[in-house]
Length: 363
Image (cartoon, rainbow, N blue to C red):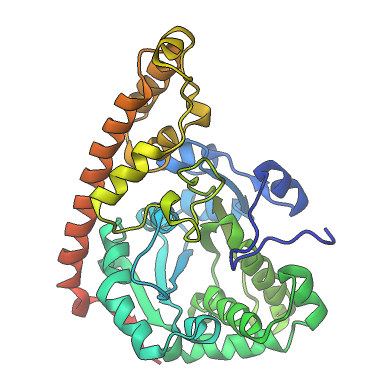
């Protein structure tokens, strides 16, 4: 795998999901592995994983396992990738996982220069309420700030002693001190739930975060004699595509990304300019049909806006037959997005009122 790097800091994009599966030894995801797979599992948006059998066995046999994800409070908005993480966390939470949400305040300070107090303010004022609004059950979730969790700090220190500079460069491309600190702290986060009790764990993320899973698995092997950790499992979803048809929504191209939240006037303008699978003229589209496989609007439906599989299939068939044209499709997408954004914002405001009732680890 020499020269092959997946970059969790966002400077490289995954060009071919199938090639990534082969190059990095991932398991192709099959929704049959889990009971009652959620929407993005069923639709192929979740496409790969690592060591999923141990999580499948835990779910099916009702054995203890945990699911964990983190909040990076470096901005006052989130994106659709966060939404997919929450959907998968919710799935495992509903199927018995002990669920953890960490606030990566130490990592934000080291890698992005965000002061701890500012990170706390953003997390409590928006990010945690946003995750709850997107479906996380606050009563079944354990929260913590990295800076207040000495177990994480201790594990990060253990990890730093067991990784060489060359190994780190092989995984991440370089050994910048901020990245080293960031990555070893994430190792501490991923393994932390096992300090209380050894059990399998699942980390649902975008594919760009796989290096952290690989590094953690390597460290867990090296700590096996001392801690006897289970190797953590990873579950990977595809990116939400850029509105211009690119692989991934990126903040470097604000005209092609929808943020959560965002003013609906701005969102509607972006949707109306989005790339579709339509033909050059309405007449040609009526005659030949559209190509929903190339349509960003259809991808938004599939990943985020339409829950009912039969409704999604109807839209697909209408597009392919030429019955549905792109202007009408975009208008429908705007309506669904407006409804989603309204529910999201109302959920955030409601969740803010209950923030003091959440369970935080402080030790």
